[in-house]
Image (tube, rainbow, N blue to C red; front, side, top):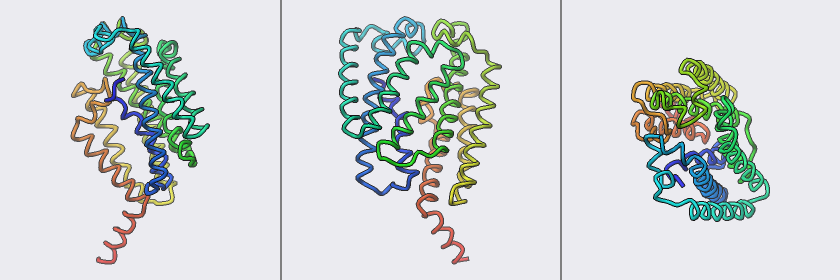
Amino acid sequence: MRPWQWYKNLILFAGIVFSMNLMDLELWFTAISAFVLFCILSGSEYIINDIIDLKKDRVHPVKRNRPIASGELKIPPALLFAVLLIVCAGVGSWLINIRFFAVSIIYFFLIILYSLIFKYIIVVDVLIVSISFVIRAVAGCVAIDVFISPWLIICTFLLALFLALGKRQHELMLLGDEAKNHRKILGGYTTRMLDQMVSITTGALITSYSMYTFLVNDYYMMFTIPFVVYGIFRYLFLIHVRNVGGEPEMLFKDKGMLVCMLLWGVLVVGVLYGVFDIAMRFVREIG
């Protein structure tokens, strides 16, 4: 079920933070429930994906140690457990609201189609991964019935695309000539091609986030731009210099990235909820 990758579902909380409902405990209960349900749904899909990719994972230096690929876990009980997880997630999603249930169904079938079809189509593979993160963000909004900001959609899509392309770069560097044996789609990518795609995505991501901070009600949001730029460049540094990036959760082990994300989060909350504005007025009065 890969619980260490459930951090990807944290994007569901973006809706409650950016909709100015951070202090609403009732909505938090719903948001946390939605997060748990998506973790359960993601876990079921990871099991199904590991069954589908059994032979390919066995040639990967890391993935060959996964329970199904190593033979430690047999396919029949794994598949049965996945079905039970899907049923539980479906019932729970329905209890939250019908819109959240619909988004959950869309997400589930999109990932299944990705595992069966889309991950074998060059470029489409990374686009689908990015769209899956957008669906997660949308799910977090519909669960608590708040406005879905276009900026949330575009920034989430571009950030996920940036991370997905970075992962492809790392896989090419790590696996070398064996890359296409592990993931057939890697045979269609080249280092130069991925470099260009990452450059385009990086520029678009920084521009989109910057425009968001310019147009939001509080211009203090512009102070968060350097942290976003640093985080992006730090990720590229980790891929190309530290050889980290095949699994994005490795970023949480990097002190520079952790500090950057923490400071960005604190600053964003401070600006959105007026803490930073109060602090700045206090400083001006003292001065």
